Length: 177
Image 1 (cartoon, rainbow, N blue to C red):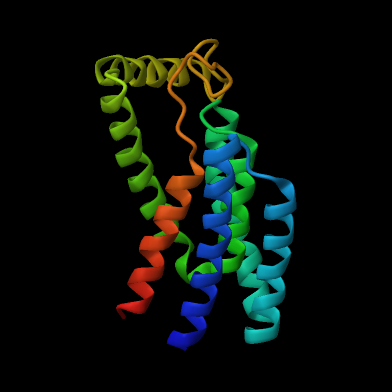
Image 2: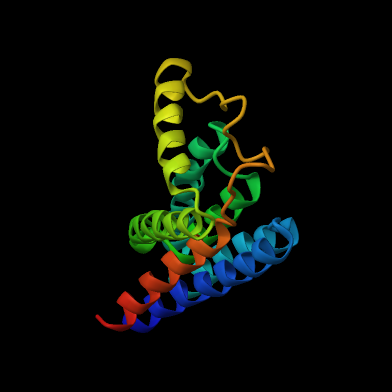
């Protein structure tokens, strides 16, 4: 069973690593990577684990993508990040999707702090977090007019690297079990 789990999470790391590569280089995660990865994950689960494994892998993709969809709707990340996380969830499967989501969120926070500190904008970033909390508290998921991923003047983290790092942490935890 460990070998099967390592296969699923290892393949999800390959998918996430590819997404991170393109996200850093082009600030886009291509559909030709995420779509086939999602399908490959479902087929991998079907072949190695049967119909039930494939169904739970699809559920993992819905949960992972759904979690990121909230941030996309709020203007905090791009659609490519949502599609990449959906594909990673499908490949990794339901057993590891929560672990990957938590590790990805933690790594995203770490990388965001590093980016803000390296650009000498930590104070502004922390103030903007307060503004966003108030905005979303009163306006729901509508993107803020200035503090959103489409504004090139704001710090933007290629979140594919956080997805890859979080998936890598999960892969290491599978290997250490």
